[in-house]
Every structure is written in structure tokens, then in C-alpha cells.
Image 1 (cartoon, rainbow, N blue to C red):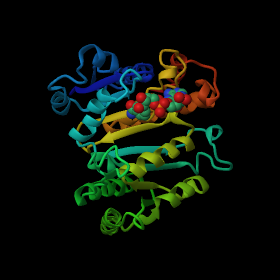
Image 2: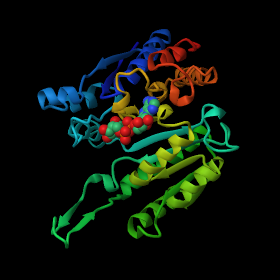
Image 3: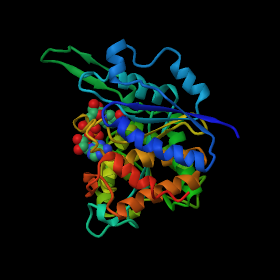
Image 4: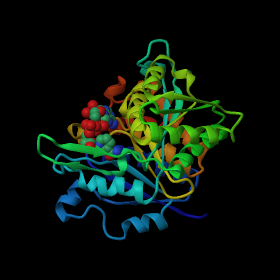
Length: 352
Ligand SMILES: NC(=O)c1ccc[n+]([C@@H]2O[C@H](COP(=O)([O-])OP(=O)(O)OC[C@H]3O[C@@H](n4cnc5c(N)ncnc54)[C@H](O)[C@@H]3O)[C@@H](O)[C@H]2O)c1
């Protein structure tokens, strides 16, 4: 059996509690299905950064790039590090240096009871958002002119490359083809962002021609937010840029029951990729055994899916669905359990 290494980075705040719950599930599934995964935990977080001044040791990025199949990460953010330096070095560092250009965000309602929309249930709320993860406004290009004066000007660049746009759009179409999703919608704002938007639209139309069996359509991102609420069933796969994706994926999380149940993947196809629940470190809940661990557990399932273990990923998702159905959840989903007990409620329902 070949062994594949997984880097586990619990991080700050509620991150470690979610990762603990996810790891107890992963270890059981790994042993029962003989997946051959070896988990290596790294204690990089705000405590470590404040103690040593080092966010990530020299050579660690190369080690992860060369020797690991995936990264399983909790969350970063600590009020004692207001500039988020350690988080930027580790999380954004990995996104850019490992070229994790696909941000994969399934929006799937797991139980009708969690729907915030009248008359929209599990059948209607089930689509996937792909957010471009390495370009756009997040490259940090721009500058000030006459900073601090009354005439101050700030310029923030939004960067789109043909290569960057094409690869995320192609990934969205490939995913639709592979999973039998009927359509891909590209959302932008090309009526205002004329140059970047024009590149996105031309690229989308070019790539769509190669996937004639999949319906393709374009929407302005403002209209997209309205339709995600009015008629979520019209979407199969959505693809959009870094900033619009950042915003619409939070709306997606609200549609599926909140930040506590949403998982995400930061993927470089075929290479080491990073999986994290979409919530942050929620400092006010840290160490109190109240945070919902389902986002971290569903993230573990997503990581297994990426590693080619779809059956095991499905078993974990089904166990979460069954725990929600039994109302064995944390408070945010209407239950009365703590983090640990909610994780155990999933663990005892694993049908391995
Ligand atoms: N990827 C990341 O690591 C990431 C993402 C977002 C925010 N952050 C950081 O996290 C810190 C806190 O940020 P924030 O308060 O804006 O976002 P947050 O996601 O940490 O929390 C926002 C609110 O959502 C709810 N929530 C989040 N996760 C939950 C869970 N698992 N169970 C139940 N409720 C949950 C809570 O009410 C919480 O107050 C900041 O330092 C921020 O920069 C990190």
C-alpha cells in the first residue's frame, strides 16, 4: 500500500476544535478502508508566531509541495496579531506559492430544516461555485498618490490573465461534465469592468464551445446574487473571479445553513491542495466547545473526494446528514450538543 502524507494545520481559535473532530473521523475511515494516509500535524498558529516571530519555518513550503498530497487546515485569525501576518504568510502563502487556483465551494443544503428560503429545499439548493483563487484584486497591486493629504488618491488593480481565467473556466466545465451537472454560469461585471470582464466573457465563450452538451450562460454578478436567492435551482456550476467569488460564496454558505457547515477546497489539480472549512477562527467561541464541527468534517470528506476516495467521502457526508436529521448538532443548527459531542454524533453514524 502506498502511503500519502497529509499535513494537518489546526491553526487558531476554533480551528483546532473542528480539526480534532475531523481527525477522529478521518483516522477511523483511514484505518477501516485502508486508505494509506499518514497525518502529520504542524502547530503553526498565532501562539507560535508570537513566541518565535516565525509564521512558517524556512523550507516548510517546499516540504509541503514536494512531500504531501494535501493540507487539512482549521482556521487562522487572532486578535493579538491585528495585521494577520502569520495567516497571510501561511494561508495566502500557500494559495499563491502552491498555485491553488481553484476555490471549490459546494453549496448543498443537507436538510430542509436548515433552509433560510421559503419553499426551497435540498432539491433546489444544490450547486457548486468555483472562485478563481490566485488573481483579481488579491494580487495586491496598486498604490497611493498624495497619501494622507486632502488630495489623496488610491488605485487598486484587478488583474486577470488569459491563462488564469481559462484554467478556472475549463475546470468548471470539466467538473460539470464529470459530475453530470447540466450547466455552467459565468458571473462578472463586464458592463463596468470593461477590460477584465471582456477577457472573462471571450474566454468563457471560447471554452464553452468545447463542451457543447453543457448549457452555458452569463450573468452579471448583481443579478446572480438575486437569482441565488429567488431561484437557486437554476444553477449547476457557477464560475467567477476572486472577489465576486469571495462574496457570493458567503451567500452560498447562508443558503446551506450557515458558516458552520460549509467546506472549501483550494486546489491545484493533480498537485498538493488545501482543504479548509470556510469559517474563520471565531475567537469568541474558541475553547468553549460550542463551535460547529460539521464544516471541518465535511472538509475532511471533500479532501478524501479529491484524493480519489469518493465512497468514503459519501459515507462521511451521509453521517453528517443523519446527525442533522436526528438533531444531534450544535446550537447554530438548532441542536443542544457541544463541538465534541456533535463530532461523535457523526462518528457513530459512519457506515463503513
Ligand atoms: N480562512 C480563514 O482562516 C479565515 C476565514 C474568515 C475569517 N478569518 C479570521 O477569523 C477571525 C474571525 O473572523 P470573523 O468573526 O469575521 O469570522 P468567523 O467565521 O470566525 O466568525 C463569524 C461568526 O460566524 C459564526 N461561526 C463561524 N464559525 C462557526 C462555527 N464553526 N460554528 C458556529 N458558528 C460559527 C459565529 O457566530 C462567528 O461569530 C478574524 O481574525 C478573521 O480574519 C479566517
